Length: 54
Image 1: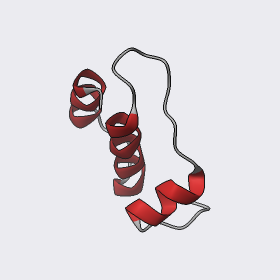
Image 2: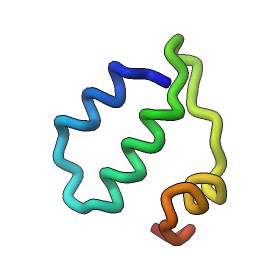
Image 3: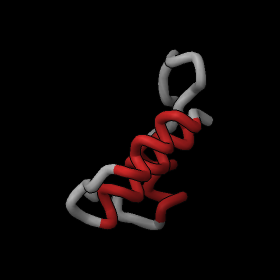
């Protein structure tokens, strides 16, 4: 988990709750060394309870 990225996303406005939820989920999954985020769209949809299209 990258606390720095999560902190940046927490302060930013994204325009909708769904966008912020996805951004915070991705920030939570980001690696600390900057190598990437390893999760699929299906996993994100399942964990955030949003549709795949969102």
